[in-house]
Length: 274
Ligand code: DHB
Ligand code: FE
Image (cartoon, rainbow, N blue to C red):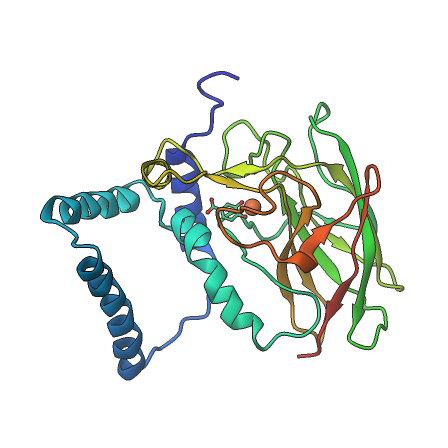
């Protein structure tokens, strides 16, 4: 790999920040009372940590410098999706039936190529990695088939996402796959590699300074949608894979671990009505 092709934190951080800013979001008007309640609780947590651990002035200044660096490096989406999003998802999941959700992460891109129910994800002619055939059905809570779409994206065999790492073509390993009238789909792709948080930016420096590891297990990202049903944002992992038991983003749930037979992995998605 040449220096130009090596994805750096600055590339993926800035791209993730730009992607977050450009995503269409419903704006929320948060009442003052709610802002006060939540922000007070967050600040109290910080104050308590300082008291409990006798945090010193030099440590406070190091934290200030680090926070500034995360902002300047555009790494807030990376940092928050790895270290905070899983708890927001846990709260959202309290009211969700059907297939378990998990974090969205910073690398979703909308409006990808739409493909039929038996599909091969867009990939380079010389795409590296073991073939993976991922198939299954989308059904409702009663088991009836749904005509659904699977918005799927994943890292390549080096752990890089198209649209965020230089050298990977736009749309690579991303598509929206439609199920057939029986809710079935069959997606041919390649096995993704574990994903490593960029180690050369402030988030990586923190992980290093704390003696943690910077890895997420290999995963497929999916948003599954069907008319009249609550969409699920989820990820699927691979049984026995590295870091499945120690995901830095704490986003693995036992129900989301695939057990592939050779190159074939199956999973059925269950959606609840809105
Ligand atoms: C991050 C990357 C991912 O691929 C993911 O699924 C979740 C978080 C991140 O770098 O923040
Ligand atoms: Fe990911």
